[in-house]
Image (cartoon, rainbow, N blue to C red):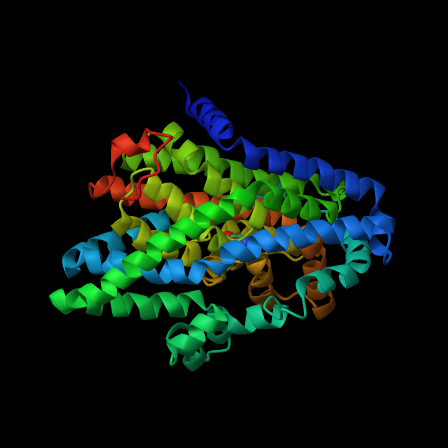
Length: 468
Ligand code: ASP
């Protein structure tokens, strides 16, 4: 049977088991489109029925999102400690790390090459300059309001760009790069949710635990209990997945300028064709070439994580689910706890593809001719920008600013282009996060297969609830 066919069947099987979440997504899309078409004006007016419905949905979505985000830090902490301390010897750790870098590198390089090929081949930006300036005027106010949920203060453009090591690199400020990666105070890194710094600290601590021998038992046992309890909490939270994802998808779709699909068809074709090639050709091909993991079964095993990634647009928030899906279906804890948290933080191949296509799209729109050298530079910067982006909504879009800066666009074009991309951002983010999470899981499966760390009986058992 042909690969794409197998994958469709796999998704079909997954739908059977995860029908409630899948229905949440479908109904969310339908409801979002209805709100978008019939309530756009009303939704903007205070106390209108549209506004009330939107706020209720937003509340439901945020409750679900925050509940799963709540368990990310304890989960990452305990998973890495148990994982690395159980790997123990340096040689095995080095082998896992080497393979992880190898697979992530292939996936990311293919992503940027694919992005550059699609954008230069389809030329999605040609002739859309006027459209961009019109739409960006309309969207500018709205977009910038969305990006700054001021009271929580955790998603402002300024914070995300300031926290990104690429900004410091671009400014030649190596000290700032180091301080954003090596925490001087791990508790502060935890409180700020700085994943790269947390992972570095926990990994060093876990290697040390492995080295001190038997005396590490109480600490490891503590984290084993913490991990088990966290997994239980995730099981409970997943009862809310269907309404939560429904609400998240409905609110996202309701804010999307659906008319833009027509006007920018080539841009959407380039982006979604790229995502489809990743999902239906690249990842299955890698599983086929480098392992004996059955593609069909594997996609159905991680379907729940893929759908949650789609709904939340956050790899970090989905991490608990990604770990749960992979472990329940036979990938060893050693591999999951080592590879998946790093993947959710560093591996953003779909974001890299999106960044390359979008940057080239904007340069085409503003008639900026790019040399081969500049295209290569965009690809390189997208690799850095994507892998240093946090696994949170819109991080991949916001770090685009860092790539756009050196290309010779005028300041007004930069603002227009960015505001414009923001208007169509959420839907694209949902798809790219789904791919980012899928590729994290694919790499975990590849390493697990290569290192005999996968239980194939559990993988083929859709009812498995065992954590290995
Ligand atoms: N939302 C994406 C993720 O969490 C990152 C991005 O914005 O590209 O994987």
